[in-house]
Image (cartoon, rainbow, N blue to C red; front, side):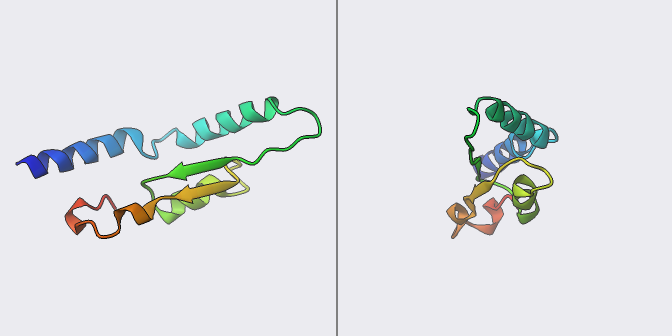
Length: 89
C-alpha cells in the first residue's frame, strides 16, 4: 500500500510540476527578462537543468527556434539502477 501511495504521489507531482503546458512560455519570459538586464555590448549564456523529461523536451528547450536555453543539463543518470516500476517514463 505504501508503495502505491508513493507512486501516486510521484505521478501527481509530475503532472503538476514537470514540463507543464506553459513551461515554454515561462522559459521565454525569463530569457527575455534576463536580456533586458545585460549592459550594452555584453552577452549571456542561459543554462537549464532537467531531472525528468525526454529527449524531445531537451531538444525543445535548447532549440534555436524556441530561444529558451543555450545549454541544458540532463539528470537522467540519477535514475540508473532504479526499479522499472519506479521509472516515470
